[in-house]
Length: 588
Image (cartoon, rainbow, N blue to C red; front, side, top):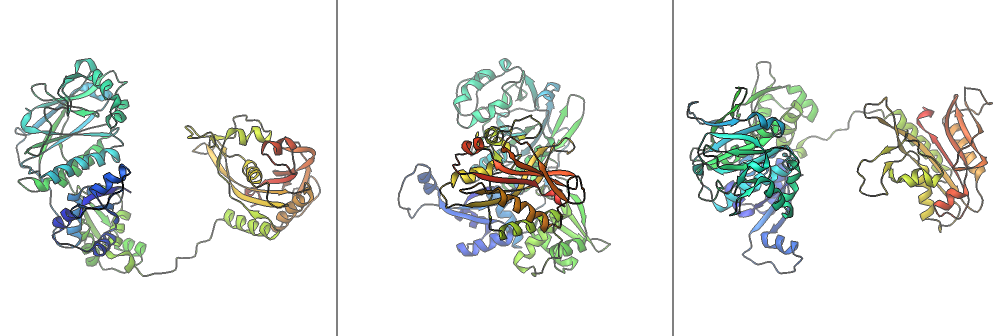
């Protein structure tokens, strides 16, 4: 969940009233967000530097508020305060509009065809007559950083550039050129760099070096120019110093270059709707015309509202309440979703450009539940759900084994190649194991294909425990399977092990009989497919002549036997052990 840090006093000023901390926590809970922490700016710095100092009385209190991951409109104080004001019925839902200017007067952005090979899309907008304070300016920059980190996927999908329009001359062009052809002074620098020099220059920069990989190996770099060939930005790395915005900036030109057009439009809408509140004409945004080389024209930002019809019975049935249409529309208006009752008696919702998270009627239903209050929803027993047959069988088997004196263990699903194969005398034929592509540790290289390594590791780490040790595990393994759409499948397995002064082979054999008896399987002569029988096997993890395969209804479902001394030595187990592993799913 993203966390937004806002000054308490500034937030209360934006809300038009003050709260006690308990009151504000209640407001947050009612709106579906959470006050995660209360701190100060200096305390944060002291914590980062590992310093101990007393809190000063004049330190500004900072609220850290957790917001839903899909609510990009709440990532800054402006959007958060507005949403809470509307929720508290202290403000009407704002109406965002495009400035009424002619197409001839509109700023133009020309897109060159070469950009299609690296970052093909660009969307733009202008905020006119902006009045920044130091706090609102910092919030403007902070919102861009937060969007870059989450929705923009660290600038790989979208890169945001903001510029002082009064320092530039339209029309603008978006191009893709060889790095050696691009020269400009980057933000916070005084020296001009070629783009390829800039890549090397920022390799030691803690912040910007994380974005170099996005374009450094490309034969062309994306770049934006104004009419006088002044560089606006080299996305997704750095803006130009010439058009840098500051507290005195009045007209802000915003451009978002992207590989994903849908996300670019959402990012642009999020910025302009939040900060158009500071424009001379509140909530009015000036559009920009983007012209592609094939002649296609687009006007951004797209502030259009789309309608969604939602069934009243779906809302009530899912939440578990009985609300009238008028009540639902009122609750949705509190969540910044204009709504009205349709002719059919259902709800028509008008989704604004700020609510990119509304994709399905379930999103509307969730907002109704939030505004209604989760604590106000009457408690009820859910309809009886029949568990999966496999889970029912698993629980039944666990109970039977536990009653025979075995203790259940849970082991890691991921393991090392050596433990899964070499240490249990098995060979890897590359046909079974699901391999982790980029493991963080050699201990977690693949998904287990057997429960045996985990159970033996448990014994190896508890070899000083009083004997005998009787443990079992029922869990999933993963096996490659080309018939599945993901290329692998899970399989439920049962494993049990006896470790003591003697091998306990007869006890494991008896456990097999008890499990088969519990599921109603009769012991039958060899080759009889109506029940189960055992026959000699030759598995490398067991002693030769002291092992057997379990055959159920004509299919091999598992093996049990005395564990081979080499395997025991590999896991540092000094005492003899007997082990069984079988496929639970085959018992259904």
